[in-house]
Amino acid sequence: MPGAFPTSSMRRQGSLTQPSAKSANHVENDATLPSRPAEQEVRKEPSREDPPAQADGWAPTTTTASQQQSAPASSSDPVAKKPPAPAEYFVRPHDVVIAVMGVTGAGKSTFINYLSEFDVEVGHNMESCTNKVAVYPVTLPNGRNIYLLDTPGFDDTYKSDTDVLREIAAWLQDAHAHKVLLSGLVYLHRIQDVRFTGAAMKNLRMFKKLCGHEGLKNVVLATTFWNKVTAEEGSSREAQLRTEKAFWKSMIDEGSQMIRHDDEATSALQIIDRLVQKKTTIELAIQREMQGGMTLDQTGAGKEVEAQVERMRMQWEKEKKDLEADMREALAAHDKEAQRQIKIEREEIDKKILESDRSMKRLQATNSQLAEQLHSQRQEMSNKMLLLNHLENREEKREKKFYRKYNPLHKRYDEM
Ligand SMILES: Nc1nc2c(ncn2[C@@H]2O[C@H](COP(=O)(O)OP(=O)(O)OP(=O)(O)O)[C@@H](O)[C@H]2O)c(=O)[nH]1
Ligand SMILES: [Mg+2]
Image 1 (tube, rainbow, N blue to C red):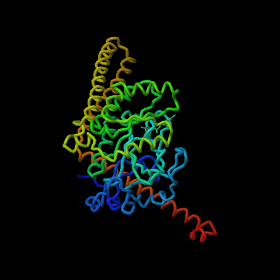
Image 2 (image 1 turned 45 degrees about the horizontal axis):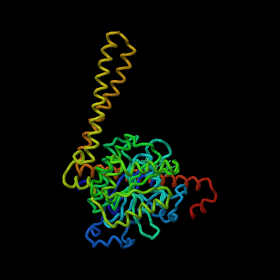
Image 3 (image 1 turned 60 degrees about the horizontal axis):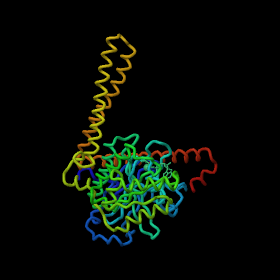
Image 4 (image 1 turned 60 degrees about the vertical axis):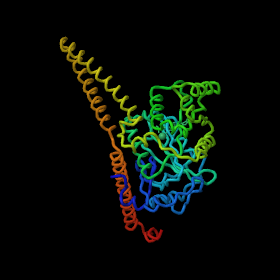
């Protein structure tokens, strides 16, 4: 797969994935980084019930190993200070990897934070927080290591749906190329929301298309924000989710399970356990479609985004026509101020139309273009890491020089 492999330093480490959020040195990380030493590809895969073989496993990179050593045991307190997650891991074909999805603010990162011993960045306002796919290792109470995948929602404040889909698809394709399949998906929904908003419906449609019918068997639909509703409110909304076809009924009919996430780490563990107990992996619809040679816009999920972009484009075209009519009137009335305002609005709409055309183009991505995207993200991250290390070293040298010059105890400092 051209461009699918990381930089030489990463290849040496043989990592597959790295988390985003607050990585070591606070570098903004990106998506999956597969690179598996050749021998791992051919060796006999252990049974999914085997405990993970630590020896050839998923050691973090040398740059972050020390931080991992200082990591406290998995904590149920999401507020407790945790170390940043290592930048890379090995993820092997038999490892359990579970994706967490849902609209922005549904509590995806918080969910992972309950279980991960590393810091997961959680949002603190109405804007989207997680904008890249990121993997976090989790040690279950029985000692088993699994991985949770944090994902951006489709109604991201800063990223278009096209870019969110590209991000997720690139990760999934990359994982597939390295024989890593998901063991399941957790779809989170705020029980507090009185009804499904347009964004929530869109997210759900996208999720179903990503999974495909087969994938729905390994899905847990979980409700969050139980502390924001009364027991009656919660139960009645839960019943609505369960029984209405437009919501979760069709998914439940196809094998998805519904559960409350109402008890922090305890319910988070129960949810994960349901998927781990399935002991199966799934090839998602989008993975199958793209492996079969489809471009992203031809996949079910891609068509969904395309239809959305097309709808918005038509709406802007209509607004542009209305503005042109307004402009004719303003010209006839010699109303300079109105003309100026209309011109500004028209320029804004032109920008949006141009952006939707770009979006459509970006949707026509092939497997190898997605791999290229990952490759350059990885390269960018690697460069940032190098730069940060360089700056840190330089700063350290400066400090030493300063102490040598002005501190009579400089020898002691050097000995430290
Ligand atoms: N009351 C309540 N707050 C929650 C719950 N889950 C998450 N939150 C809060 O909701 C906000 C958003 O949570 P996140 O975990 O960042 O949500 P997210 O789904 O990862 O959002 P994005 O990264 O933007 O897609 C944070 O302030 C959390 O503390 C919950 O079950 N109950
Ligand atoms: Mg998040």
